Image (tube, rainbow, N blue to C red; front, side, top):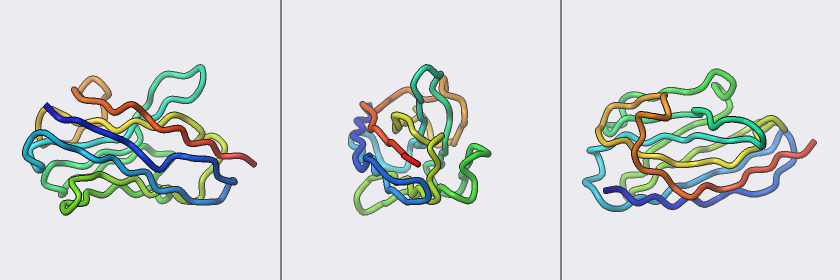
Length: 124
């Protein structure tokens, strides 16, 4: 079992930056891949980024490539999402998720454990 707690959401002007963090606990740190997903109002939850347990494989959704960076913090057992050049369309509830294995995936169904979500609102 993996427990996940997100933090760092908030209100930011378009073009600004935010850093989300997700603290994890439970299983051995490098045995599970981690991902970030988001859900905008009236839309389905969508993939944002993921990183493998070994920190060697990373995937991004096309619209965030070059603007968002996912990283694992081994000392804190956390996964971070650095978001830059934010746009109003990035507004959503952002969720941290963990797989039941170390291989990174992009599909929501591949993730077993989920955090409670943190709101990110980007205004123009």
